[in-house]
Length: 355
Image (cartoon, rainbow, N blue to C red; front, side, top):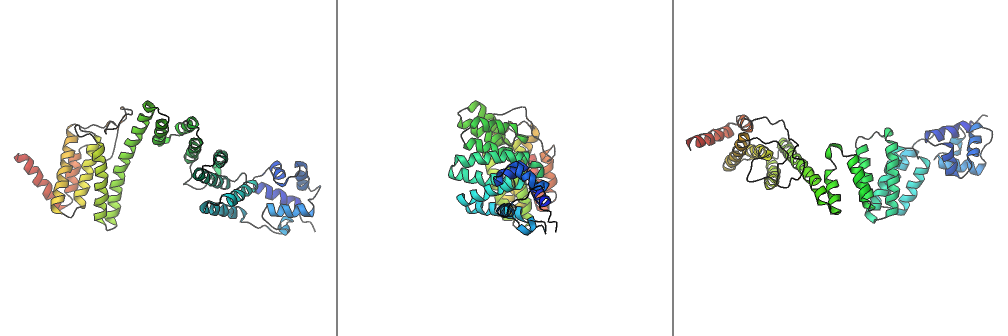
């Protein structure tokens, strides 16, 4: 009977992405021995055959060519994740290193192993774990073409490398990585934090203030998004609460003695409050605030990014949105969709004309 042992060994090795040298190293044999097994000019003895079967997580029968049993890689991934969740340091290290020997060219194994070492390294302040994580993240970058998880990005891998460098005390290496992969300035806040820890305020403040400007405009979008979703969810009181919370934050951040882009944002949020409130007096007050901020902005629109009191960044940046050019017109159009609100709008307009 031809058992095709040589073909099976070669197939298992290639499916794992291993070279003959890597397999030989894992089994502590010579490269020549592996080569002879695959050529069929020699066969492993019984003890080595059992070791090969265990290494490939299969049976001796399968190794001899009867059938193929799968699930090894998935089982290893599940074990790594289990150990990480349980924070099983010693068991996890053994599980991870075994998986890496068996699947050194698998992105999933390398990435999950990196995550294991990083999380435990940070939590337990273990530099050896952190350095191991660093090596594995770098390896994961080279294997990224295998990735099928949209939640994992090269940007995220590079940032993980930077954070590990910072945890190891190499701030300059961390800064270099963060600046190198600073997609859409998403790393500005962390760059500013590291520079501040290095007592370099002149460098830190522009990064920090640019990051804050981005976060504040994102906060506006979150407010509108929450308001829409919570209103559709049948909880208008919760929608009003979160918009008011965001409004308070933006009001404290913006200049009180000059008109800026933030007045356009707060006008829109005050309008949302008027639409969400079920109290007639509060609706009127919110609508008045919205109209006031809208008229102030429309009289002297300013879209520069120097929009709040803690801005030290690039004053040549410009904000933009899809709210419309005239905020007053936006307020009027929105109010017209609600008869009671539009009545309040007309009353406030008539009061202004009378004065």
